[in-house]
Length: 302
Image 1 (cartoon, rainbow, N blue to C red):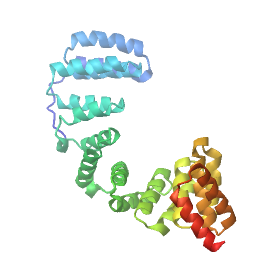
Image 2 (cartoon, helix red, strand yellow):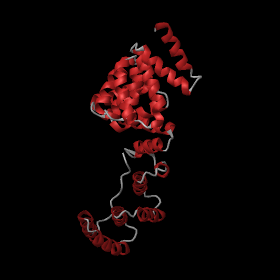
Image 3 (tube, helix red, strand yellow):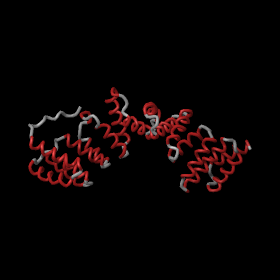
Image 4 (cartoon, rainbow, N blue to C red):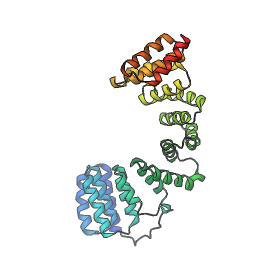
């Protein structure tokens, strides 16, 4: 629950002016809106409702620097107005100034504002502080568990868990999202990844097939699916996916693709093709232990 603000005594002249300016802003008539705002600023000095409209006018014109200065000017005179501090943090958030927004959010008591932990978690995540992101997202989920799943917090906490090696912890969260958002490709890809990392091979394979259906031309998804298929020794399906990947790949990826093909041929018992590919790898990397070991296996079979 946020802070309860005491309502000031009615100011009907201010209310009327705010309505007029709002009407101009909503209609896109920024020139008249700005002209009224200049007069209102002088008449209603220190009133944030006017400053708020001025900031919106600046943002609509793409004048983010002036909007930023307007926030700072108001907060210099009213440093204890927490609602405006929060609004300023959100402004920085939407400007993707993650560290600056987080610094503002941290000046507020996280328990007093419903979505502050979620915003702080996302800022921490985007600025690379995964430890802080984990703490904020977990706190947010605990506080809102009675309301059910909050998809954004579940997704990003799953991602934080995946990036920090907590793959088993990510599974129930991302599975919950997969049940609700079965056609979301990002959820399907993350689910495939955590299944693979948890060595849940059959689950990962099924999930990769579904994810590929949602993202058939996505290189990251193709690469993940190929990894899962090869781990499952599904050479034939892997070769089909590799063919799609190769059509999208850069020249620098040739070596990686050669390894994939060699492994897929090996699992399909196409030993002549596999042997040729491994030999190609050894031509450019004579000490490659994986290729040498594979050729030893092939020599016993072929």
